[in-house]
Length: 497
Image 1 (cartoon, rainbow, N blue to C red):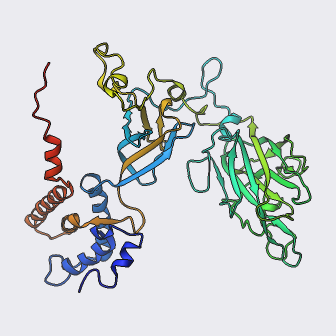
Image 2 (image 1 turned 60 degrees about the horizontal axis):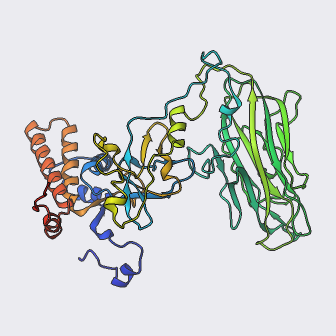
Image 3 (image 1 turned 180 degrees about the vertical axis):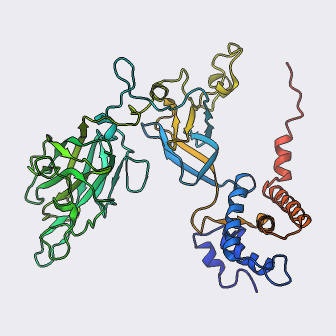
């Protein structure tokens, strides 16, 4: 029975799964192991599929580190914040580089002489300050970090609904901007509205009893095509306030969206008013509002919640209307048991703002004289790890970011990294050259964890596992004689002094 039975050449070459024949899925590894190794008169007489799956996943993770090919990489244009998030399946990096104008990768080297330590908040006399500060409660409150808004990222302080169609929720020129387009008409009326969107941030208020909330808002102006814009900024306890965005008008007969109501803001002030700031003047000018004495006593976590809505649309879907928010600040007078931080450390701030003494000049003409040795003969004693002009980086494992030097700002950065390969079903696959190594790993792992298995049997399969992994490494090393010969052809030339 052919392995390619049922798939024509046209389906392969016009499909999107080229090159996948060299891999075997982890699910196939598990099933084939159960058939070949488990059962009566076989090496393992009794073993559940769950056990095999556990040891198979562990084997996949272990072999990914030093046996399998490292084929995962990411490319981003480095933002002004000079930081890159570590991938969700990141274990270690193999290479970091930036791309020059000719498409050539320039290797970046790590710096070991700086870090981003926890910056402790201090009083004027330099004693530790345990008082909550507004700057520590709402992160990215002024929206200066354009990357601090995401639909899914757990490290982004602000979370948002997923925009639909041409709608946009983004940080533009230091402001949170909701760009709305018309939605489907309200049933029975023919009136079009916008969708109702939300942006929120979770806040720890375990040590806070009362707080004040202030914000700046711009309500979209009404005209013959668009209705007035409504912004609501307030406090909510509803976990993950991510409600239906398409049902937008509270007067609709079918389940209105809480994103366009006041009742989603379920925290009140000491006087019994909702902790809510509403901007709906339609003047398209920025105004500041504040609410005081919001009672959060007895609560551990709250959400600063922002919702946006446009009342009516008479134009086409191309017509847009924008609400904007800035400077969302919570202030309070509370004492916490935890040390407070002032944000980025002094070391990180100075590292990002420092301008290297040399810039990266990517001119391939006379590169020996013009680029790499501009001070030829005057670099005696230079530290080799700093004898390059491409830039540097360091990795903050605790916070999950890579920080870069300032001369890489705006450039394209490529991260080649090692993954443990434990992700979706499509990601969990084994190269066919290492298939036998996976079987031997599972066999050894199961036999070494079972009782009443002779020690010499365990040792035998430990050796077989070692041999299979070694063979897989040799096969996957992919050394080609012609390529190696070409590299070594000039190595025997005598270097004259």
